[in-house]
Amino acid sequence: MIKRFLYLEWRSFFRSASLGKSLVIKFLMGFMALYFMAVFLVMGFFLLDIIQKVAPDKDPIKLINAGIFYWIMTELLIRFFFQKLPAMHVKPFLILNLKRKTIVHYVLGKSALSLYNFLPLFALIPFGVKLFFTGVDGFTIILWIFTLFLISLCNNFLNFIIESVSAEISVSFLPIVIGLGGLFALNYFNIIQLDTLVANGMNAVLEQPVYVLVLVLLLGTLYYYNFKFLSAKLFLDSGLKTKIKEVKASNLEWTRTFGSIAPFLQMDLRLIWRNKRTKSSVWILGIGLLYGLFFYPQPTYNNMPWFFMFIGLFSTGIFLINFGQFIPAWDSGYYKLLMSQNIKYRDYLRSKFLLMTISVGMLFVLGIPYVYFGWKILLAHFAAAIYNIGVNSHVILWGGSFNRKKIDLSQKAAFNYQGTGLVQFLIGIPLLLIPMGLFAGLYFLIGFEWACAVLIILGLSGIFFHKPLMKGITNKYLRSKYKMISAFNQDN
Image (cartoon, rainbow, N blue to C red; front, side, top):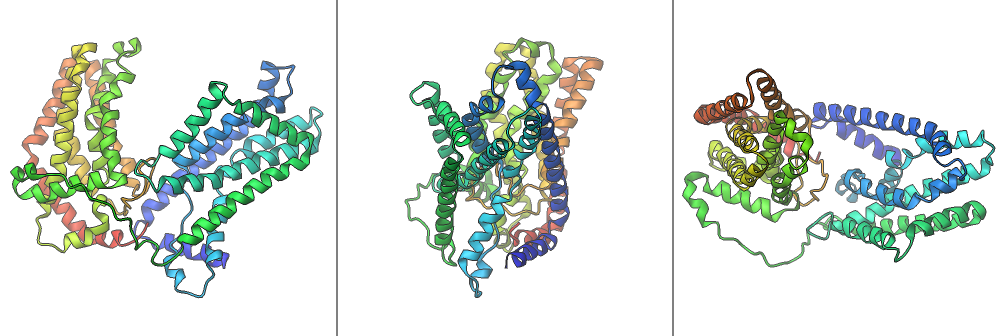
C-alpha cells in the first residue's frame, strides 16, 4: 500500500497544471539540498581540526555535547519556519476499504525520511571517521552519532505538535517564539542550566549506553501522540464543523467613494483582515517602515547613496511586493464563482492597484522622519515611491496573470511557500534588480539627483499611461482566465 501511495503522488505531480513551474522549483530545491550536503560534509571534515586548534586539551565529543542544547533549539526553529510537513490528499481514500492507520503511518513515515533528519549525518559521519583514526573507540562514536540522530527524529515529530498547536491560534508563530524564548531565558539567567543538563545527559549515554532507551521511549511517545492526533482528524467531515465565534464587522462605508471598484475593495480588505495568511501583509508593513533603521544609522551606508534606492523600493513597496505577487491567487478558493458573475475584470484589478498605491503612499509619508539621516534619503524614498506606483504596481499585476497555484488562506503565514511558483522567483528582477541597477549606473554616470529624477520620470510615465497599461493587463488576465480556473481547482 505504501508503494501505491508513492505511485499516486508521482502521478499527481506530473498531472498538475503547474508541472513546469513545479519542476523548476524541484530543481532549485534539489540544488539547494546538494549545496547544504556539501557544506555539512566540508564542515564535518574540518571540525575536528578546528576543535584541536581552539581547545587542544578538551575532549571533542564532550565539547560538542556542551552545545547540543543550542543545536536542538536552532533545529526546532529552522524546522518550524522551513520544513514543509508531508501531506497527501487523503479524502478520496477515506471512502475506500483502507485502514486509517495505514494512511497515518505513511504520512508520519514520510516525515521521518525528510532531509532535515539526515542532513546532520553529513557532518557527523566524517567527523566520527576522523575521531576513529585518532584512537577514539568506534562503538562510542557510533552510539554518539545514533543518539544525535534520535534527537533529530524527536525534533521532527515535536515539530508536528508545535504546528498543530499553531494551527489553533491566530498568530501562527507564537508557540515556537514563547516556547524557545522561555527555554533560552531559563538557561541564560541560570534559573535552570538546560545546556548543562543536556550535556550531562549526552555524556551519561556514552558512559551507560542503556540510557539511550530513554530517547527511544521519547521518540515512541512523540510518534504515538502524532499518530493519535492525526487519526482523530482523519474523517470526511473533519473540516465541516467549524468553531462558532462572533464576527466583528468593520464599517467600510468610506470605500463607496471609489465607485464601481468599492465592492472589490471591501472584499479585499475583509479578506486581508479575516485570514491568517493575508494578515501577514498587514503586519509586514511595520517591517517595511522600520527597514531603514537597519542601515541608515550605520556610518558604512552613508557613503553608499546608490544603496538608498533599494531600501526605498523595499520600504515603500513591501505591501505591494508581499500582497501583489499572489494576485489573483488570494481569491483562488472562490475564483470560479467570482468569474461566473457579471463583473468587470478591469474593476477587479483596479481595486488591487488602489490598495497597493495607498500602501506605497502611506509608507512613504510615515517614512518621512528618515530625513533625519539626510535629505538624499528622503529624495530616494520619494523617487522609489513614485516608481513603485507607476511601474512596479503594473509589473506585479501583469506577473499575476501567470499565477497558477491555489492558496489556502487558513494556513499559517510564516515561511509558508504555498502558492509560490516560478513567477514569484522571477518577479523580483523587474521589481528590484532592474531599478536598482539603473539607479546605480546613473548615479555613477550623472549623479544622485539626476538618477532620482530618471526614476521619478519613469514612475510618472507609468501613472500617465495607467489606462492603456491596465487595458493590456486586463486583456492578459481575460486570456488566462480559464487556465486559472482549471489550475485553482487543483490542490497543488
